Length: 346
Ligand SMILES: Nc1nc2c(ncn2[C@@H]2O[C@H](COP(=O)(O)OP(=O)(O)OP(=O)(O)O)[C@@H](O)[C@H]2O)c(=O)[nH]1
Ligand SMILES: [Mg+2]
Image (cartoon, rainbow, N blue to C red; front, side):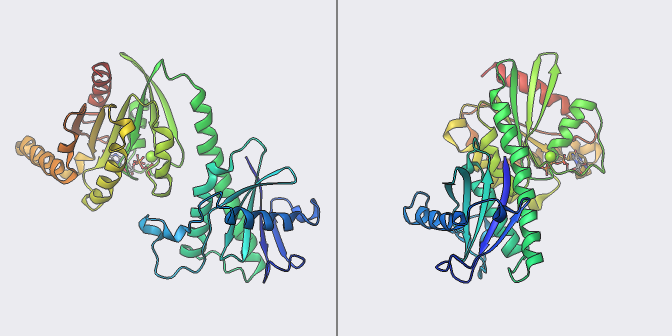
């Protein structure tokens, strides 16, 4: 678990006697020996030089969000260090400042590598949280970064470790994914409680795992966060899945391109090629289909989706597609039936 965060700032790291030190929640400068921070700086530099970690700038990230013409703060790859028996993870900002995370002994800092870099980058360059000119600003930045990384650890990493220990044999593991706002968590609520709430808006931030007892067996449904930053956690949860469900918001055509890219990023992975997939085009109630031509209209919509998403490339795999409305309950139970029929035949 993350226990503390600190920031070292000086005009010049050659002058290690004149550093400004900020930390949260404990004032660590009072608790540890004088030369601790020197060792941290030297350890960080050595880690970079030895190439223990590829020294890759986050500004080179291919994710669209990080491509900016002018990057004010460059964040290097984090370096794991053990200084005075403390388990540390450090990044440097513009090679002038160092942010350090302190973890419990048993933690693996590399579980936090991406979130540490991305959050720092996002807060400094996109949200312009801090210019490092004002103490209050720096403290505020550190507190926010600490809380967000700690929450990530509690909600994603700890949960992942806990669940990895549970036996998957008695459950059919259903991996439910898709970009944000398509209706994944609403589907789970509908299945669990029979309810749907139009005003429900609670983007999923962690692995949300629900267990369902159905006539044909028990399901463990892993509801993934669709949030852009959290999507990379899909790969932490997908192992040992018995079936994948990919959800699309049929009413939001603007999102199709993004949704298609995310779909193929996962589905093209060799290690999941034998896992059956159900593609669910949700929110069909928003299409305002007219009663008389409903079937033809759905048929046409399906053809267009097949073409756009290139689902034909799934040829040879065990897959299915159908429309749903979690709101009106249309085809919701069909999802359950398909889960059992497709996993049985697999
Ligand atoms: N009209 C309509 N709205 C829906 C339907 N399903 C979900 N919604 C609404 O869509 C919004 C997003 O639903 P969520 O279930 O939170 O979406 P999600 O995919 O879990 O989103 P993330 O957790 O951010 O990945 C909510 O306002 C739901 O009420 C549906 O079938 N029809
Ligand atoms: Mg959700």
